[in-house]
Length: 355
Image (cartoon, rainbow, N blue to C red):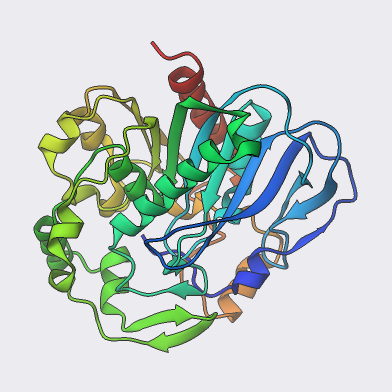
């Protein structure tokens, strides 16, 4: 699903000195090799930390509230489950800091890349359906986090999960073993003209934080063999999927063959969830699937909390999606609290206390 591509990368990454003490959650920004990309990946890692490091607020800017962490604090001694994190289309992994920080506080190491070609300020319709690139990114993160001397000593390589939102949820589906059908996805976009399908037909993209005009994308020109292939990484032992993209396009047989826990969460109620991310039937097909929904939320409720005036700022910048809106009387902070509870419980059950 397409998220905001208006704010520049720099605007989303602002870090300022924190005026108050944060909980002892460490943050490191690392660069890891991604040979298939031909470039290194920018990866953010949240982790249980000992005292120390620089107190900062990650992701604070004029539109969005940031999250306090301790930059480069020493990792807490011990071994902790690893959760690889995949952001939504046109988003940034820093925008999921509200969740990653709480998971680190609960005893998980959370590592997420900014996916080239589908990240804020660097996103095009042609890059968006290439889920095999996103799964390669996530596998590269697992490689780095388990092989690096620093992280390898604190990561429990037998307890690795994946957490994805929207297009990141689709990547999480695929690295867990789901396969999508290009024919099914193209047929869906023949009939459906909103969200991701509208993005493919829109004729614009973003490079170097600027709008670029591109050809409308015919999904049938995508490499079918690669789109339909399995991207399973058997090191992943559990998945949490929030509003996972491409929901109408997954091969049912591949879902029925997934052996790991698959916890699906939709944002909203049955009459508000976009067609492309409805996940109750996906959960029913997976042998160890669970399903939950968060009433009063919309798709964009998974983004950072907006500051007063943030909606107007985004609108003035050309944003047309209701980035700062939610679905009812509940605040985004309340919705985030429910989501943290659901996701933390899922990961504790599947990675810390597996059956």
